Length: 89
Image (cartoon, rainbow, N blue to C red):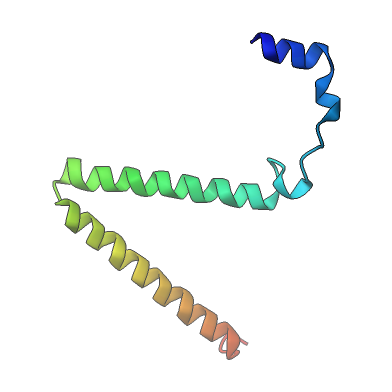
């Protein structure tokens, strides 16, 4: 606590270079990083729900996430290919 007070009172903060706008808390990059962390916490919550509340074994929960990952990759690939070949136009 005393180091922080000295840092402010001695104005040592003036010698520190400001953070680039790319790494600012409200930048797109940091917002995306925050979304990834929130997604990982949601996946952890779902894993706990599947194993503790429903009673699925741990390997079964992993299998659910593997299948969800494969299915979402398939859907994203099909959408990407459809946009590339002008199916929607």
